[in-house]
Image 1 (cartoon, one colour):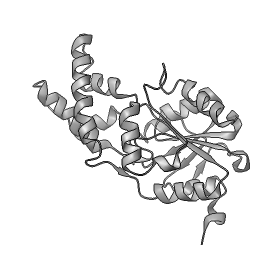
Image 2: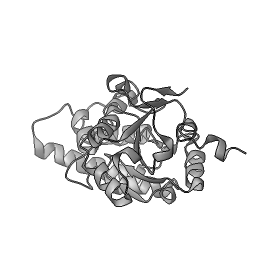
Image 3: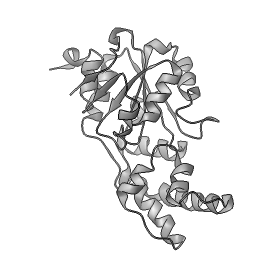
Length: 233
């Protein structure tokens, strides 16, 4: 079901910025397995998948730090992060999959031809590109930027502003799509519109900072953008 808090002027939209984890792909299991591999390596107790999932969204360094209980030893955190990243790069596509309906939605938007798309995620750029390439998402995206592409991460608006500038879009012509309050706050900070997805990893955070529009399924995005009738067969 579509919930509208602030209407999005669909005819004006030129650019969609997609979050990755919890929005385009379900990466929960692979991230949890990598965190637990790191914890086993450090001889620490493993964490339930749902606990690890609650730590996702602010980038790999923060994910690792949270899983370790926020230790003060920065050298220890750095070494743990290195181990996590090495393991994750080898296993990032073991169980990660594109959410049902995402691929068809991307195809419909691309076929429309008037809206460009990019990925803006807090996941490091290397694994982000690996996932997008491996799951055939890259062909829909003009740009893919990760948490280490800039000096700041979401909800700082810098990455969103760079993408708008690169695509010649004004804030009133751009939408951030994501599953967490980070994505909504990024849109707010950049003056963009926001769409929250309830099927992702952090739907509860969308209650704290509600997006302009909330959708329960990727296909509903086509209706929000005014493309549903044009793409229906």
